[in-house]
Length: 226
Length: 126
Image 1 (spheres, rainbow over the protein chains, first blue to last red):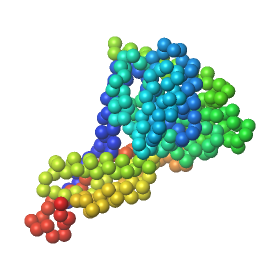
Image 2: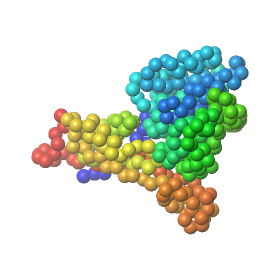
Image 3: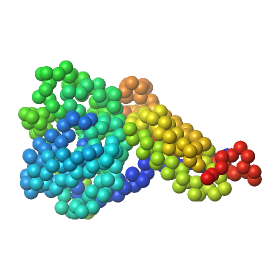
Image 4: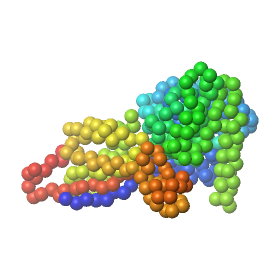
């Protein structure tokens, strides 16, 4: 009996493509964000608010993933930014190859920001690197404040927690401080913004975070290419 | 439920690796899974057994090593296992600690056996 050491990632093929994508994003100064949440937490609504707020000439594109239908892409197309739907046909997450394929006819040099809306699922997307600069997890106040403890992986791997639907706080027994505390137990120092896409409350903080990330990414890209 | 995809990737890796070891067959493949990797080891085992069933790799065993979340203290340098999300350093009580492992999803090893002169007791490859 011989034991051969393998010592590589199980998803090394996905990771290889993700690394190529990351290098391409870096080369063209594109900030790529991967938005993840359970179904119905408000990822698409957050993107609608984001696209509505950004200037028309902004160099932004969206890839939105779902198991079936073009519904989300149709919702997002009315803002006149490039939007493409990825229908996975049953797969519960996006992987790097799907991103590579759907980017094929977009010119990255025309973009500064690529927003990827993952399939609604708080578990599986956390295993698949898409070449993003950061993951953003969305948790709505109609879920439980213990979700970060129940699904730690995605909170651990995400840079930002967006607590959504805060307009519903008066009507639901959701302890927002406990939710933030739980998220920071899993991910010490995690950044958190609280938003309502219905009232617009907190959207300014989200847009500020986005803007700050875009600026930081741009200066990093300039340093690396100079 | 992405464990089926993970199981498939493990099996693909085994098949690729076996190309480098002629005259042998694979007995066991070992994987390391961090507790923060969002992989359910029971679901992974179930999927793995389902996809090797009635194939030439039916006898291939899956070894799973679950890796705890480990942090290192930035103040005193101590490495420790994080339990119940308590990332405070057990030595100096600092909260300035950094995660060093716990999200592994890695292929660790493959055990291969040479085909004997007579294939008694070994699994035939079809």
